[in-house]
Length: 494
Image 1: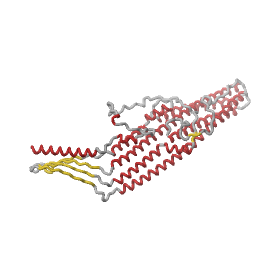
Image 2 (image 1 turned 90 degrees about the horizontal axis):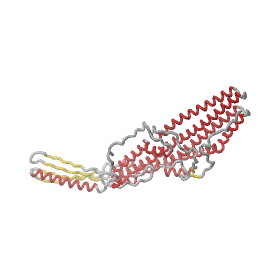
Image 3 (image 1 turned 30 degrees about the vertical axis):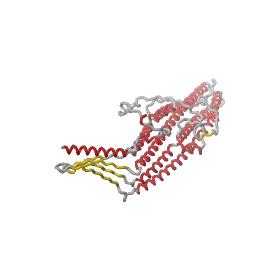
Image 4 (image 1 turned 180 degrees about the vertical axis):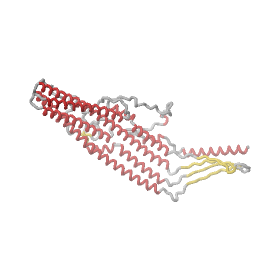
């Protein structure tokens, strides 16, 4: 019994010593999440400094419990301006949540890539009974050579960078959706105002036709014709109201809160926007956009993967140490074993070849992305310039003539100097011109949103401080919405 106790104490002492040596060797390369500091980016693409360990607050009570989910199906916020919608979208859109989760997943893999393999403890008995019984225990540890863990983590850190650039890309994809929906709704609100005014014009023309018919200067056919025009204007007005409700739901969905209470929104549809120099804009887009940066991070990952593949054939060393106690006759024995793999046949040739091809593929992908962005920029600037010039010409030259034509034609028709067909033609020209002007504003804002998306502008609408802006080619005096509305001259009684 005394010998057994002594054997156990020796066994525990030896195992503890070996464990201490193994843990000390592993601790020579400490790993913490702060090692990721230089690779952490914010959602806008700017680097973030990793917080020191002592500055990390302890989790609050109940942190392990799932967060209470808000029921957005019952009620939601009621935003009005573009900034409010953008903030809500960044906070609530599922695309943002998925992108943030992907970044956290990549960071976890980067931490895991540097962790040392755990030691292995074991015990056995070649003979458990009798005077020749033996008891032993041992510990083994695999030692990673050639800096393989560092190389693995460097490759994983580039995956972190790529995920963070994809988070930036997701942010501006969400903002682009919000901006497009916002200005579509703003245009529809303007359309509704136009349809209301055009209905008022049609109604007044109908009343004028009735008075002329009663005075014997018109016919029943004229009155019926104006009644049809008034009804058509009323249908357009009703359909525009339905369209606004649909676009409000679309705007709510674009922020990730489909039940949000979206009402009338506030925005300047006629705001002056800058012009852009195409070549400078293409350079700025390639330099600022997250897609080329994510592709560059992928190239760096492929390069680190190649270096890791090259050192893979260098064998790791596994050391095992133990203690064995023989009961009778009493005998203490030490055990030690060193093992390593001999790279005789498999020298990782295929993986190295594949890694080199992966670098070439990643570089080609970066070049393809740059070409695609340059092409998208050219198309976006082309559409933006045409829409902006068209809107300016409508505002400065075409709309004033169409409005004046309706006023004059209405007055002359009330004096009996023109037929109702001339008045109808003038009214139709005004309707088409007003709606074409609004459509040009929609196209102008769609182009501005697309350019802001390519440049990844946090501030919207863009100003002259944005990259690659240039002087306006054709400027007109800006008119507020209330002065840009169609009108008519008060008609005297016939």
